[in-house]
Amino acid sequence: MQRAIVVGLIGSGIQQSLTPAMHEREGAAHGIAYAYRLIDLDVLGLSSAALPDLLLAAERMGLDGLNITYPCKQTVIPLLDELSEDARNLGAVNTVVLRDRRRIGHNTDWWGFAEAFKRELPGAPVGRVVLLGAGGAGSAVAHALLTLGARRLVIVEPDRTKAADLTSSLEKRFGQGRAAVGIADQALADADGIVNATPIGMAKHPGMPVDAALIRATHWVADVIYFPLETELLRQARAIGCRTMGGGGMAVFQAVRAFELFSGRVADPDRMQRHFLDLCAARRGVGPTERRPAWPRCSTSTAASSSS
Image 1 (spheres, rainbow, N blue to C red):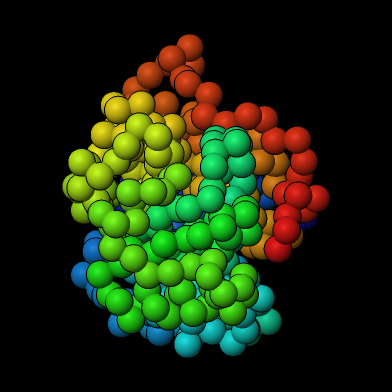
Image 2: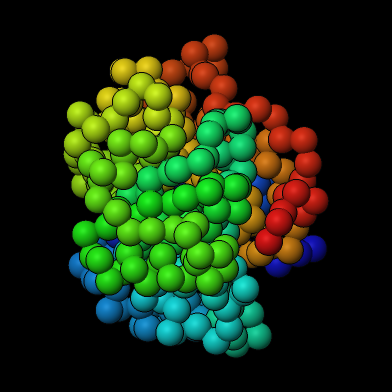
């Protein structure tokens, strides 16, 4: 009988996260005793400066791993013993496997975004895409978009140094001219699509990451946030006829890969999608007949379809 698996999520304002329930339900489907705990910096009155102590505590308590979210995806890196190629290239970690007294950082976010994009926005043009945010999530989304064939990615970020660093990293991997730093009003004028990878729009950071007047019906609009499922950005975009994509798909597919890293089992993406939709429906208080399908059925397992 396989021993119990215990993991956690470190982040700020994560009480509404559906990740614990997704992991635990998938674990149950495999017959695994699987426990997933929230380590909310806000609830604990801590900042990312507490990461060294939290990682040490996780190791001492025998946790198998940790998911890492805002605002710790980049600050956790110096505390790790090893990085996967994806995590090293992206400069951001969302999954830490604790094994044999070693801390191994991975990034499953980029693959999660790419899988969701292919299913929810099939055929969407990616000639010129505007990315809002150059943090940990932005780095993953940028990698995903260029992997998906975006010819030109314009990064809009208040911290110009952070934006320039991300641009330089992307051009080293994907080629000169594929990424650039820009200003929202100029960049959106001839963009095919927009992705919000900032925390603006989260339940604890309400609002719009960009002026709604800059959004056109010809844009497709994506958001990495999934609580709430429909951010103000997506609501405004949908109202004028844009194709939109919420953060739910990315949340599911990054969890698929993270579950595999923690458990050593192959996750069922379709089952985890159903878990997510059930959890969202329960939160909204709706019945099964009112649930709206979010994604087409996956045709391959993550092991077969992964490009990482």
